[in-house]
Length: 171
Image 1 (cartoon, rainbow, N blue to C red):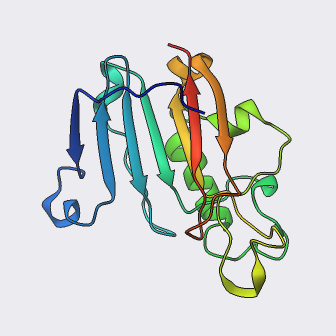
Image 2 (image 1 turned 90 degrees about the vertical axis):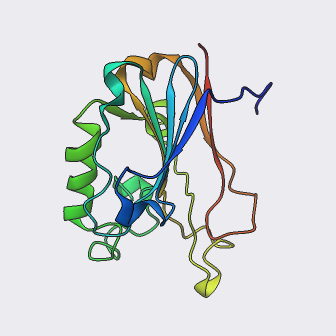
């Protein structure tokens, strides 16, 4: 859990594209030694395009990416193979657009064999029976991945169909 809070140097809202900026899809907070991005990516969409921020500082992208990347990230991979959020195309897109472009999935790096979900549908008591998906991520630039002390999920905190996730950096 966090020991202290630091305030960002600046905060920007949106992608710089007026048609999309009012949708609240991206927030960029600049800190002294990194950028923190929080975003929402619709199912089967093009995803966020990597920003040119990495040229000056490492980037941390966080948010609901609406894609369970690996079979361990979803409760029933065989039964959900064609479900939005777990299609081969979406999983390949996450790999192609982020993980093969210099971002690291901080939770999976820290906990390679751990089943941990961040989303449970409201129907059929999915949360109670832990039939979930890991859709929320901290993707960090490779250059800062070794500074990740922990990446964690807080599944017992309710109030939404998603739960909070956290990241601890040792800078």
